[in-house]
Image 1 (tube, rainbow, N blue to C red):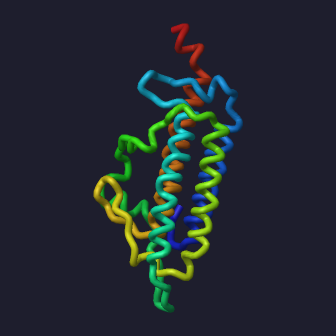
Image 2 (cartoon, rainbow, N blue to C red; image 1 turned 45 degrees about the vertical axis):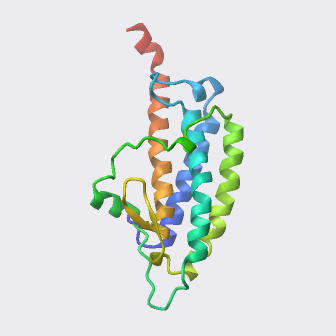
Image 3 (cartoon, rainbow, N blue to C red; image 1 turned 30 degrees about the horizontal axis):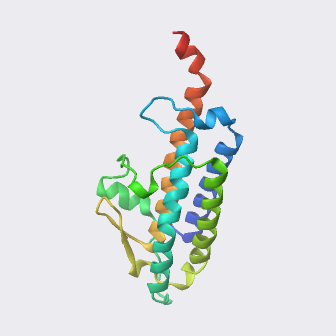
Length: 183
């Protein structure tokens, strides 16, 4: 998928959020808390981490939104964060979760409530993006890569996607756990 417009990113992020919520909602309680290996997170822990990261990033996005100057007729926002991550060489890098976003043992329901609260605030900012020059305000990713405001919104969807992939791997491991244990 190409990410040329804010609408492209909004569609992508909405799809990621739907998949993320559906994966957790559709898993049974035992599967949600099961870890495929001691060092790996459970589905519930991945979901909590996403909620905590959203909680951490929402005030940053709110602040950047407030600082962004108005768009001009010439404004064409650069929304593609994936291209930035690929160009910087960190697209497939695994990062350690910042301490405030490490799972703390919240239930799925608690994480969902946290995610919903942050998500509504985030969407209120995103609705303002078309009227703003989102290229003029930046966020410095912990890996040292600067992204603009619209790219940060895209990065959130890419992050969700990364955790969806981990949760799919958990679900696949869960489905074959009996076979592995018997071998």
